[in-house]
Length: 117
Image 1 (spheres, rainbow, N blue to C red):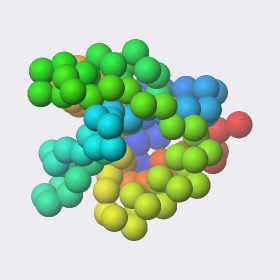
Image 2 (cartoon, rainbow, N blue to C red):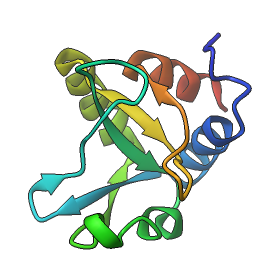
Image 3 (cartoon, helix red, strand yellow):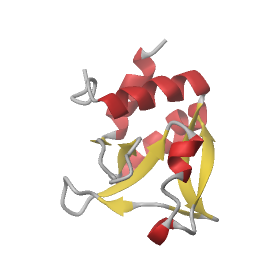
């Protein structure tokens, strides 16, 4: 079981993504938001949210040019997570206003999503 299994924002991300069948990334046309990890040196993190309103709340100040973009959960699981794993990119799940939240390995997230009915 993932070390994040009991983290409230991670749990909410997994449950809402599974229920709604969609996740949200911040995009500026073809450019997707990627930030440096606060936990791991020389590692990128791509934040995702389980609802559009939470994603949109982050589209201000330095991220004002970004807009939430929906990704179907099956496309996210079958394509994005594998590619992010191959690229060594972590996933930020449901970060709060202060950008606090888990930085998760793609395999851990895929495993958590597969356990939700």
